[in-house]
Figure (tube, rainbow, N blue to C red):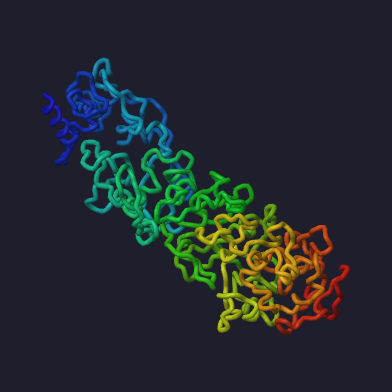
Length: 618
């Protein structure tokens, strides 16, 4: 009788697959005679009736025999699917007409396994209960989206509603979508009658083959994650990061409820799965860097990030955030950092995005416009573009948050001086000759005589960990301003006092190993100064600090040589209580040679200073 009933169901449902009979003794075989250790009937021996009935079906689809619960479900939603692509969030009406609802009549964790339509009094006595790992529940927001349509295409704005990284399952693929709209159902990936591949999957998921039937992420195959042979233990089996692929970061069921995109953990916690402390062997550990005194606020802001971010709207005050994804695209990033000297991105930033600033002819003003740049290669895109999307008015408008400056103004090429982050010294339009420093005023690799004035640098040449062996990049540092080691103190020394030229002359306060500027500028070597201004005795008096003449924020300045004026505001003016703990200069004129300065080039009415003559820079 059991086999006759089974054959009838197979014929009636059109199930012609050779392996269909493997439902017997699988976890979906709830009959009392089943060899499964899972829940089963106390006495009923028929296998198929727990899902199907030959007569009086509650629903016509699949001659369904399960009772229909009235419970309300919560559906998956995300900024990407619903706002960017414009797909509608599923409704209960969609669910009730779907194949997915059939699966959920057991896996919702609410409907009793013995609650059948064509059994009086509609309930069979069962032993055991469905395991918690098999209960999806009524909240589908942390499961792979179902009841959405697969819509391949160029993506917005060319083809609204479509996704350039989505494809229909290839012809003959075991993964399937349904209806004229190509809708995703539970049975797109699961075959409830066949457990050959485990978890009733329609095919082996080695190398995340189920995922890649529909998802083709740009650049992933050649990315650091896609090619990684790092050992990875998953679900009790040894594999590699590359083989485990999508599954290392995403979970089809039971993903983090605090984050969309079915990630294993909320935001940075997903990355910490491999890049935590300790890190996966072969991976870089970044988690400890975010415990340092100065860092990007990866762990202090949650829930602000959305995908995609196509402009600065989600970076403004009240929405400011800094997550791993803002700098790294896990589907496209490759190994490798930028080449020094140079300001092009390294492979680790591929797939991220930034902004290119554009300026009028005026100096010391923020960029007048920005153009979004997606980093498609490591040649044509610049690291400063990544930084400026957060550290300029592009993100926070005309009023920077406390402690921040508009770096697009500081790197304006029309300024009299700036570190060569956006452009080299020789093309700093607002600078006056001589634009480049002499080779003796720079340390390797910046002192190459054939390239002086044509070199560029990145923000991460100055900002990064205070420990040289830590992963590169501005994750975190024990130093203020996330200054990079080994020489990492500015504007104060390790003892908390402002740096002075007396420190250099007297070899005090470990200036040669601690003064931040000395990373690139020798200042004083073999008993000789590299700048005649620094060797003047009155400049080396005790108490005359570096910030008496130079701006505290050395990105750029209105004046040459990063000189600041008394009237400049904080944070460029240190503004200390002592006579020389603040900017005191009121006029400065760049000399015609790199070391040709005298008293007339500089003017200040502060006690102990001198008043110069002639025309000074504005």
